[in-house]
View 1 (cartoon, helix red, strand yellow):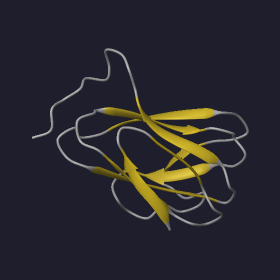
View 2 (cartoon, rainbow, N blue to C red):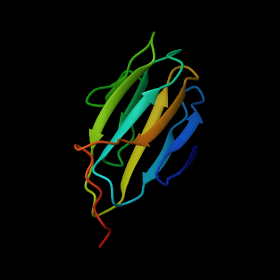
View 3 (cartoon, rainbow, N blue to C red):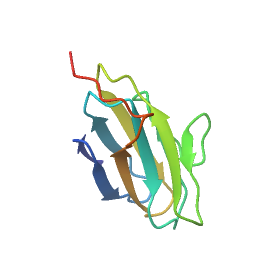
Length: 107
């Protein structure tokens, strides 16, 4: 298993059928999960549960293009994102900018 902390962003490459765990730092309300190269579908969960390749009800960032999925999180606590794929796609998890993304001071 690979993983790290998005402070505020994280980039990595998934290994086949290996879960990456990324903890999002408190203070942001919205993140984007980006399938950077679109080589394989990425399945993920945002509640700390284990994702399944091709499973439901996981979130997913689909190939064969560069795709983005936007998630909303609790800004007052940490959120754990777990990602998995049947391939080896590169991905990023990044905060969003703009009026929809309100910065909140951690409590």
